[in-house]
Image (cartoon, rainbow, N blue to C red; front, side, top):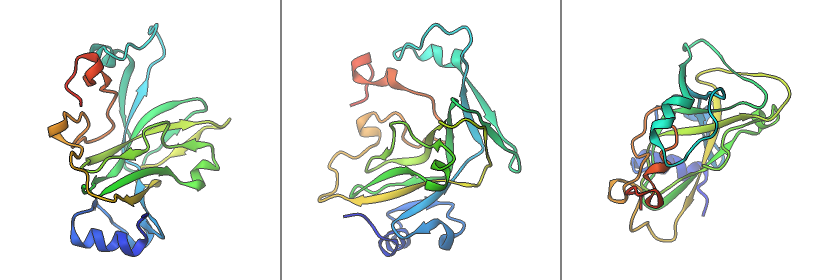
Length: 196
């Protein structure tokens, strides 16, 4: 079952579902979703002097990723063909009986801006800000401003709560993340990590 606005508001009031800071409930809580705002931090991928990315090499991250922090009243210009990691302003906590889906807003989609390539899911038990995979598929640069509504979360209720939710017991790599996080795929089991 997908949660409606009434369900979302009830779960937020009970405190088992957390979206904070939720500064304007009337604006951000939609009929069946919650709008999330854009944070100020971005990770940009450098294209020069990199033959390829090796997913199992953590040391390469510093070589191909640089952080940009935009002033609160500034802009981040997303150029055509660019791919950057951004973050939500809000921090979320998803209870064990819900799964959250990160969706783009249609108003930005109509400007050819997408907010996730593949990572559109927040598992039961996840806590932290959400890293956004921002791409400009259009032919013109688009100015993104901190605090603008950039994405939305929809919530699906599980038939039963997850027995092994996302978190430290699973070696979950992104639990309690703050700001955009580069890939930590080297922590996966197949690369000799402890991610289960």
